[in-house]
Figure 1: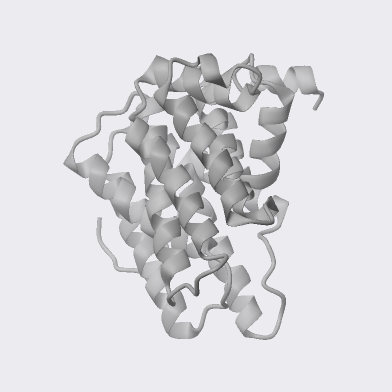
Figure 2: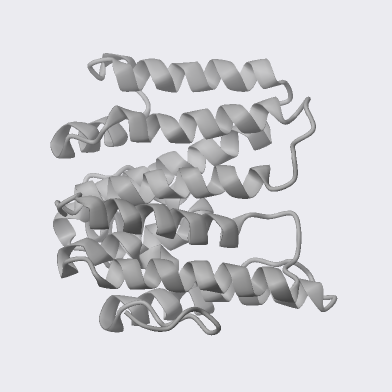
Length: 261
């Protein structure tokens, strides 16, 4: 797909570098955006690219202070009227989405704060489970932002779905250790709880949670690592298949999870 046609398919007006960042580093959310209603696609891609940038900053800086300077620029850009974002296609796209859909600044700051925590871990030892907890909080914020872009009502059921989805998806994506049998069962139980919570929401809300469909594939990859294989990413074909089916049929049931719903 050429850059011009891809930009149009993602909602139009999205800079190629924003598309490329979302596609390469947040493929679940990027593909989910393409499967969402046309009016939401551009803003969902911008959110995915923003999440990708916040994950990238702690990986590319040589000193925590350099990373913190970058993160402070983002805090200032989000707090301002948009003038400070001039020249940054990603910041301009994100601020346009923030204005159009009244996105809560606090949810956007979650991604910045999580990046700051990761910078702190460059010099301090992290406690076991920190990465999974941080990932769960970040993903919950991103699901919440996606719901608002889709114009979905955000009541107690929505809040519960966002929390459970962030927990399952964040833990599935967390790197650093393979899954043993007990941990796999716990992850799939979390996924099934999230799936049931999403199923209870109005249909308009559900595209926000499409990335959840890749959780079983992440679990399978991490279980394969436990058997001696490499802890590899989900294959592109598996990702596309999972998201495409979920957009048509809904999220698949998780094996080994609770029943009902």
